[in-house]
Length: 253
Image 1: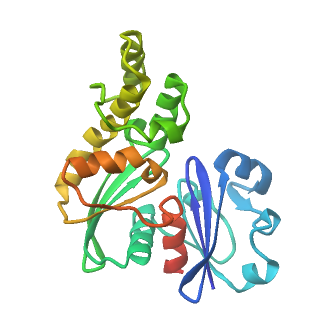
Image 2 (image 1 turned 90 degrees about the horizontal axis):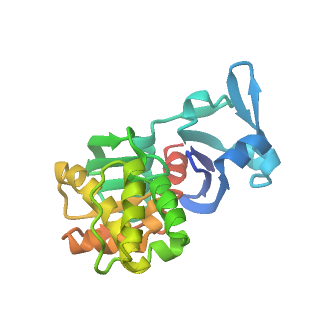
């Protein structure tokens, strides 16, 4: 029995793997989770995992625990193994898809990672963590400006309004300008989704593959998948894309 923890910027995700199968998945908003279950022990952060109610005392005592994510370097739990985000996500994608050769596109709350996997091994990767313009946070901000929820935003890809700003902040101003021009909300949503595709295509072209495995919370954006397919990419979204890192941690345990 193994437990994986992904301390993401927007969500903290958990995966429990038993007998080589995912037994349970859970997630919490990161800030509320830290406030409810976290405490400082000197300079380190510890979590009351038993207090979450997600694990029994016997599971915590018996399981190997592996963690990754933004908070991995400050996590201080006895017996916890810390792994890099990219290796956790590759392990999760291998486990969830059964594929051995693909390019991983992981789009999280604040960054985007692209990794080349050949014969089941990580060969190379590139990461965009300098700007959140190709991340879930960008989508949340744009949805707020358009006054739609993320489900509505992710349902539009036809006739996208052109948006050229490469910065998330400037992109907000550009979107407001296009709203004032009277474009329909559906086309504006499509334009927002298209900007994500334009930002990740140069990263994907560095590691060409027959198949793109799309993970992270942004993988739930149906329009993003459709627009990638329109660009000629073959895209596979695992059953649990948002928990992929946590699943990978559990597998590595």
